[in-house]
Image 1 (cartoon, rainbow, N blue to C red):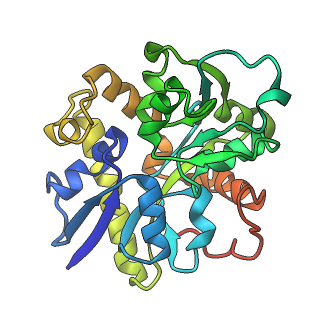
Image 2: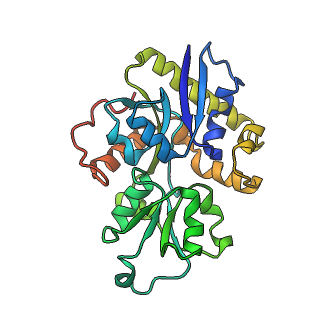
Length: 275
């Protein structure tokens, strides 16, 4: 039986799915048609119900929760993992820049939701591919921006400074882990099959951890010329115990995030979110 599977080329996702899609573990006869894409693209495809199993931003989940259900394994959720708000220089007068463009890595993303929570008065958002934001700041195309993924580890080398850690803002005010992205599966797929696939993702992560800190060729090939140190920082930050199993703490954090309605009016879909 074959399923389409979408995730990003970032080291945390390729680390998680390597053993599964390359059959380093027993896949119980399941086959996977893999599609690698930026999470904003994956969010868009989820609205079209394009893929059977896919990585998504929790900020976009209400858009397609009627079509997909959240798996326990494979997601990115934890502490100290939030997006960073950066610029070329410190901001001394926020009133002067509140109408200037801010680079955001996609409209339907958790990064946008967290930024909206921390800076509700900054409305001039320019939605961009995450990898373009640093250069846009350096080239004065935008005043500041929100960075995610590997840019967290390289922005200082490019001469940028941190204005705020949006994850710290969430943890301070909400006191729960930060829900970044999860793995969802189509609701129309049989529950028994969904649970088997969820278990296989968990086993893929366990295999990866058992062989870590070795960086596999699969992770290297998709890491966008990232050096090994940055790849490991990426994995260490985003692949946590919550990636193995959301648990009650992880689920509570996701429900809190959605209930706050950071990007959408979310009230009536709480039941049946999780497998």
